[in-house]
Image 1 (cartoon, helix red, strand yellow):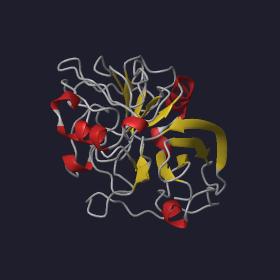
Image 2: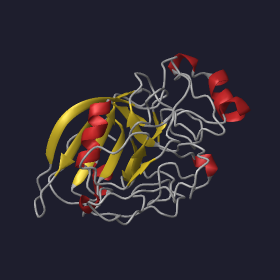
Image 3: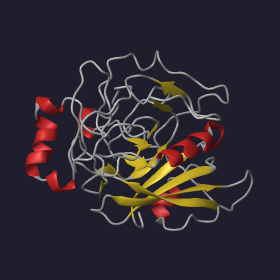
Image 4: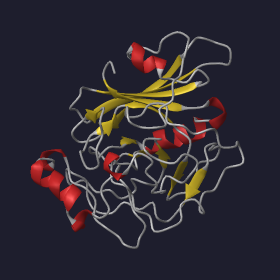
Length: 278
């Protein structure tokens, strides 16, 4: 999670980075009022009514939104039975969590369990086909401490899993051809610096919500946390700020624009995210 910007009132500072990510930085993130607007990934406290500001583009209705992969205790975990030629680099367990009706799968593969460097590939398949076709490979950042299969608020790790991608937004207008419902909102502002001191300005120009512990069909700014606040939230795809995040996945601006033009609710896009061979 990079740092999610919060609405301008109240405005808060965002996170630091990998070298500063030891006990002091982590306790500061979780426990002090100075971090009321934690960096990307965990609970961006927007002062606006996110539902009321949601703008749906003309190119498609919302799709059913149920997290595909969730903590064992989460009530919304969805069993799925995908078929077809396996997407390379995934475990059988991860492949089985991809919904059978999904025809767009964004695969984020971390370098290792504790790395904040990852690679991203969008796989697509034609209707009625078992053949998954890879797109280009993009570099990305994930959380400063790597990955976890039991994400907690402020742990500086990205949640492993398979999650639908149903809602988007940002400070800027959606790129022409955007299909996901898109909330253009002045509350998508990232101030301050990242965990390694890099500026966060522009990080939330474009965001795509990852349906980890969130209410599908709402703006990425929505603060509802179905699995409880302790499980974190506000995990997004967003613009890279040249450093690790607090839980999100960050990509270059041109890649975010391409994803917004490509991801289609009618094709039930999901993200598969975790370390190598997840």
